[in-house]
Image 1: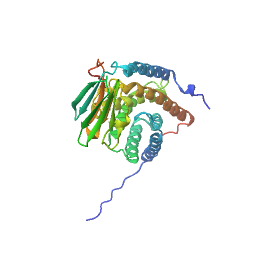
Image 2 (image 1 turned 180 degrees about the vertical axis):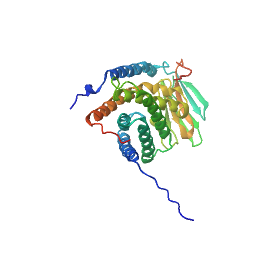
Image 3 (image 1 turned 135 degrees about the horizontal axis):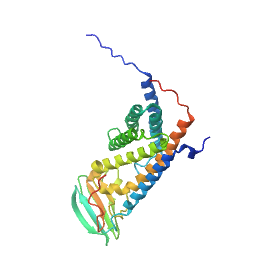
Image 4 (image 1 turned 30 degrees about the vertical axis):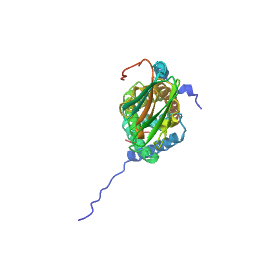
Amino acid sequence: MTASVTELTVTAEDRRVAWLATAAVALSLVDAAIPSPLPGVKPGLANIVTLVVLVRYGWATAVWVSGLRVLAGSLLLGYFLAPGFFLSLTGTALSLATLGLARHLPSRWFGPVSLSILAAFAHIGGQLLLARLWLIPHNGVFMLTPVFATAALVFGTINGLIAAKLLADTPAAKPAQ
Amino acid sequence: MRHWAALLRPGDWLVLAGGAALVGFTLPLLWQGGFAERAIIRQNGQIFAETDLLTHREFQVPGPLGITLVAVEPGRARVVADPGPRQYCVRQGWLARPGEIAICAPNRVSVQIAGRTKAYDSLSY
């Protein structure tokens, strides 16, 4: 029996996704290192990468980068398949879905800040819903909504501004198709 | 260096305002439920004890890991000691507002504060 050789061809797109996901994972680690008054309230710095990727390379690449970030980030921080992982996954999935819709907004009027705020609200919405349905089946969870909503607004705005600044400062290299 | 405000497009302000309105809309949730009147102690999902928050009392709630000690004082209640490994419910400290709950998951004990009125039976989004 001969060993079968599986050859994987690595495209430029693959490399780009890998690099961007690495950047996002690094920011997730920074995120985790920042002390937070309440579990779940954190800046979500990795979303800056998601936003830049979304604007520069499109939604599909953003989904890849975010998905890999959640997976690798959870492995590195040791919460893979723990409740936090599913909260993270739900939040990310919902914000990606929202971004998928929101990116069709006219870009003349709505910039990265809009995308960021909408995604942030979708993120906490998804997390609160999963927490209510699965982790803490009690409506007391929703009493924290104002706190999370405020955090989403503040951090969503800040991340959006940083993403907008990055996009404005770096000239758009023509993405290799 | 460009000014930060220059990075905001007209619609962004709209979304910002909408977000702020949403936050304002959710703020009353922090005060829902009126005043703390009762403490409900549950063991394994069943009500173990229900008490008013008027006098000093202590409850010893048995669970699979041992005894969880719950203290009730006028207007507040807390988990004093718990055999669980991470002590989240103990570290939560005093619970004084309706809807607040401390869950000692390993020992399957929870302490919840209830008010006179329940603002909602359920919420759906």
